[in-house]
Length: 307
Image 1 (cartoon, one colour):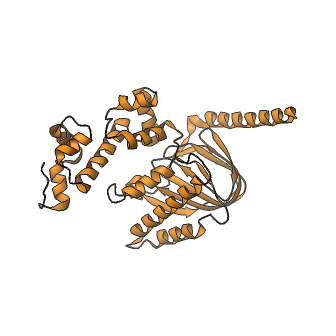
Image 2 (image 1 turned 90 degrees about the vertical axis):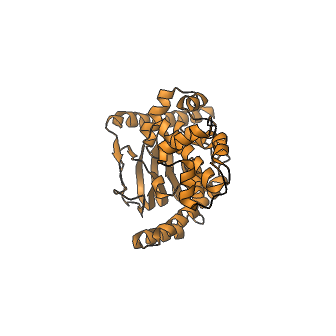
Image 3 (image 1 turned 135 degrees about the vertical axis):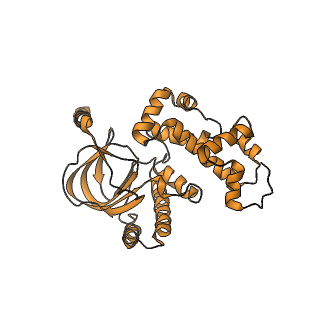
């Protein structure tokens, strides 16, 4: 009884080793693809219907959501190997290495987008949804849950490209992200668990950006060196760790300034700056405006708060 199990396990291990060898051997010439034309922040297209093995590659600075309605084969994401069993969805983050090996014709859609698509203030809820979805790798679907109508509507709206298409597409992205979270929560007990170091760093940024401001502080929490954290952020996220920290603190600062009645001094305290002056210098260096000027630029001079 035990012998067949051991044989199957050995075969599986050998297959996994072979895939890792392929990834390693071809890592010297890994292709970095950019399927978003210059200036585009979103694109949806039909999945190419052909049986072939793609070369290991990464994507430059954008997320890729793949929805397969049909298809069989294998999908390797970094060191994980998945047996393709459509219908299902795969969710790739910027910089992740992957490749396909299909044994039957695939059919579905590919969605590409980057965070430049969204206004950090107006679309905060949508950004949060997409970040939560980003911690998934694969979500199994069924004939009933595969969002065919939603994907077709997104495809038609993207093709139409009217003056209102941007607003409509953002609404459809939010609906799709919500559906994905709903599907995954019914399948995985830990649907929001980060997988990679970059995932963990992004999650820690969301949780601790009001308290931690230095690369070494985040690196200590992640049990790696600041140099390693910076290398990972540069390679997989396209930005230095310090820049990602600054951007996240800046986003939180803008939310406080525009959506609360807190004084600038109170905001500085809540964001763990030494004082209002130190916070003001940080904000002006990043935006060219003082916090009070930024608030006034949105709401005019009718301000009841003090700087």
